[in-house]
Image (cartoon, rainbow, N blue to C red):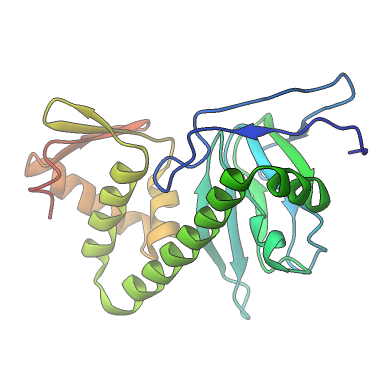
Length: 226
């Protein structure tokens, strides 16, 4: 991206609806989105942290590897969300990987210098970006605490509740969460197994606490989901 490359602009950013809805403030003819195929890596651990990224289409998995090569998934992000933001806090090299999860994933990169200039000129945006960083750190701390102290069922139920708070839509007394996450994805995010996720979701369904399919989870009543 050159010096005259257009920048994105974010509106309605808050801790539970991060960068969505978003819109492009202006884009010139030279701007292009980077295209990635399913499972293609956007960056690897130890690469220089030169950009932050916005998801225009598709989903991106953020994670790292343990010393024995096991994959640890930290987040699955979707359209309108940013990643690689720790570069703004002084991160010189990536500690995580970022990997496209869908075919035709489109990513808009922005250099750290461009982002810093945009934040310098927009104090409200700057505050919102650092709120996002703080929120993600707290979310990661909560996940670590959950993995250490809570059983698999509790972790999965809390994941559903967090998803409802993050992207849920109220439908009367019910809450609808649109998601493309597979049971394997949920297992990766909660430190459980695919079989455990399937068993617990079916148990919650049998108790009429939720219904679900491959694209959504409908929570009957958040207050009674436990």
